[in-house]
Image (tube, rainbow, N blue to C red; front, side, top):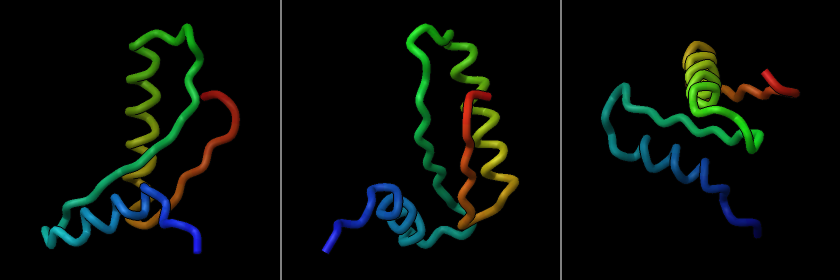
Length: 66
């Protein structure tokens, strides 16, 4: 039997805390070696904002570089 992915365990752990409205966001992204810190923060903000607007339980997948 395959183990449960870490991001599923994280989401379940946050939900188990029993605080209405409390959530967790999980993301994995490949970054170029020479990417500036400002660009990393911009991408993180963009991706988290998009995920939040999609709503709970949704998955947002990207292809290519934004």
